[in-house]
Image 1 (cartoon, rainbow, N blue to C red):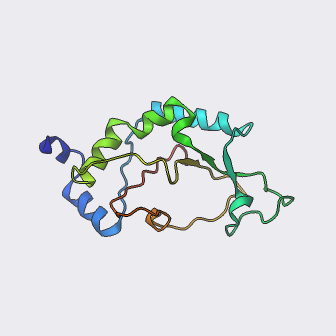
Image 2: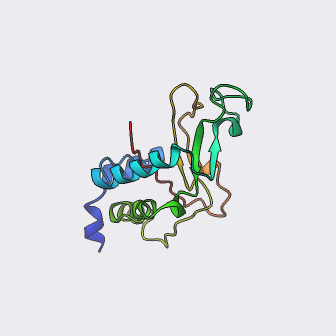
Length: 156
């Protein structure tokens, strides 16, 4: 089983992950599954199907400040992504995603947490707040730091 996993990540990718704290794995899921997910997300935004977090709710730089400000109805996150639709669960458990995570976690017991950032992040022109580069571990409150976030871009 170990030899199969070595095909997914090179030693350079592994070293970069350990040094930088992130790994970019392009085209991990394929066009079809990403397009299905993108269609589902867009259908969930117009009209907005909650639960959702709005930009005005977080008060981040660049976002609207008050409920009557322009852009105050701009969604920032569609919450509870995993439970929203089968396509979201398919992405979470996609074989390519699982193989990379298992390799990075060095075969430790791997579990999917729905506690934090189980969501679809959105970015809209004009009203989306600024989010700089960061590592999600600062938001988590788990006993052990062996955690990996997966971010899947569905659009540019």
